[in-house]
Length: 128
Image (cartoon, rainbow, N blue to C red; front, side):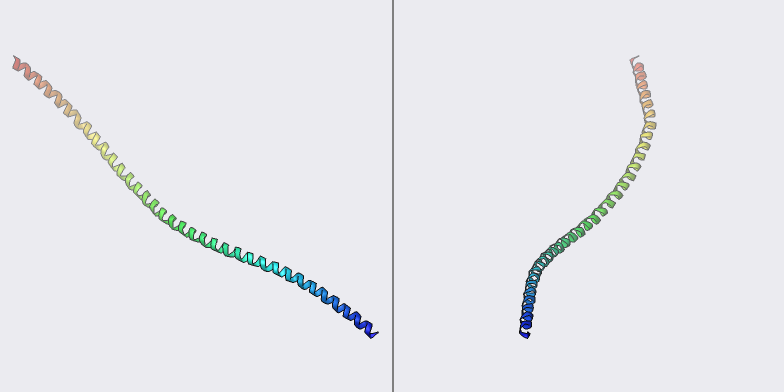
């Protein structure tokens, strides 16, 4: 009886061993897939880090260019304001000069007319 029991125990152990071996192979296969997936993810992560670094560098470059452009914009706006002030000053001077010219032109025309009358009267006297 002990012998039958021992064979039964041996059979159970052999069956359990086979089951463990089968599960171990499944786990090894699954572990291999997981390692492959981990490697893929690590490579993807490396690629993303490189891309992220490139994007950070590009962002920094854009920010620097933006600062430079902002400075140029500020300078341009300052120049525009200065030019507008100068234009206003020149327009005011032009208006004053135009008004003065109009005031001076009337007597000049009157004097010119008087001179023509004088010459025409003088010519009549000479002709007599």
